[in-house]
Length: 423
Image (cartoon, rainbow, N blue to C red):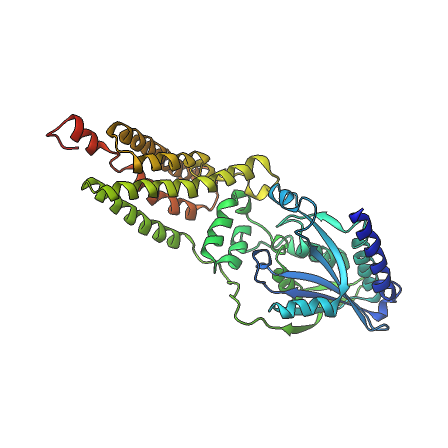
């Protein structure tokens, strides 16, 4: 019932708002692309893009948006988790929509497209058909089908395939992973976590056409693009560029992504030194060292085990295809969650036998992790494995080595059963 009411309301809105533009002649239409810069929320970090259709007779301007979603949609979070995220296309008055982006401190650059009248009508009709209730919903994909690729495809439609013909043959200077990281560098945790979850499928060579899953890449490519129109006339696609708003105080999108692994390695080495000191305290028979060593192994097991569980879930049970073929599964495993109870037992037990068992199992768990890391490095000698996961390896390796090659209660066992000997 609620969906039926929404469809009825939208149909009335579409008829009322777009009624004039639907009947406008091509000479009275202006087609524009509006590119918005990154926003505050994580899902806005890569910017946004929309199509603008203006009718000079009525003085109306319409904002066709292909990136609409609602957290209140039925089963939104479940569908998102399973990789079945539904987006929609919609239309609103341009002034209202652009003011929202101004108020939220977003860059806004508008590109006016030089299209012959008959092509403007073609683009207008295509956009209107897209936002009809029966056509407005589509299954979103971060790299293959989003707000940006849809505008890219409309531009290709307007140029009779010439846009794709040029850029589908041009090699990109980046991979999809590198394109993502140009926008996430300023948040170390998000930068690591997003790239940790994505497998080698985003490390393959791509074309400039593929780059245009990013709105800014569409703006960059249309700016200097020329084509032959339906009348055989050579045209520069963009006739004018207007900067409507400039964001203040935002992190810039990097021209080239920064290396991530040195930062993660340094972070891991610092933590490893701290945890190694706890084992040193333990060797000196300081009770707090035993407790801190056990707690540190529990916390690391909890963090890496939860990350591994999510990674396995995304690979086995969902449609998030860009997380598939992920070599991190070799050493980020749900098995690491076992370090939580083992570490707590290690920290709290006062019985030498149990202390030794907890320690031995923990050592075994982290040795398996170390072996998994080395295996993930060795397989890169083969052409079938090429994931850029050095960052994940460097974050885990020092910690895993620290936990794998430390005394596991041997001193206390020796003191009890073999007095006079050294552990």
